[in-house]
Image 1 (cartoon, rainbow, N blue to C red):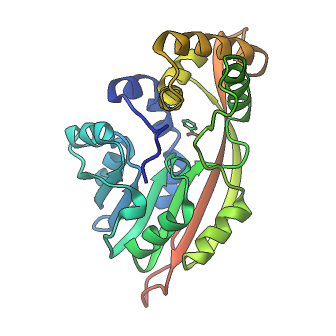
Image 2 (cartoon, rainbow, N blue to C red; image 1 turned 90 degrees about the vertical axis):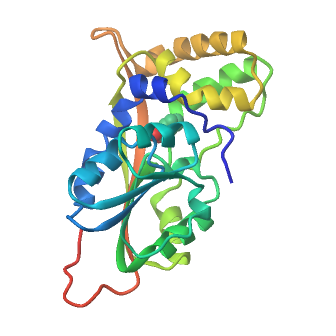
Length: 262
Ligand code: BEZ
């Protein structure tokens, strides 16, 4: 099911969200895509990392629920399709990869089942997304400001599990060899906190029917509240308090003679 807070403007994302793909370098290295491998990129967004997987010689297919971002991915030559991950029914993939996307999918069990079904026996899952405690300072400040504007129970609309919680989800879907690790990663932003809020929280504000002029006020007040926690006055820099959950796992038996990776 679509997440109503997941709303994207491809141009804005290209300017203020590029760093998300840049921080995907570690998980991309863990994936270690090989020429000829069939790889599924779940939540491929505008295809920045999908294109890098293709450049390694892999046969990569991207899926994303956002038609705007899939259009942007296709423009860069990536094979991509608009579909909710939980509804995806392809199979036979050597690996399922995902960066900074699974936290938008609020019901993890059907997503994990679809990813397990997409993999060939012995196929690997290599994913990273928001983990427990992700953007806690940002969420707290935004909730406080929303509350002060008369939106008392504004739901953030995201899923940030602990390593143990997500391990249980994957086990129930039939995954084995699960390695799940919480990685706190304070992240330098390319612009201001206001820019980040515009790019990543516009869907959230729209889902709560906040009028356009009031959104600007809420964003400005939220940035103001975050100065002590996430602003570096010496360098005039803003940070986001990201926490990642980095996960590798396998499904079924590894084909004979094939080495274990990663
Ligand atoms: C994240 O990558 O953790 C994230 C991105 C946008 C909004 C919230 C979280």
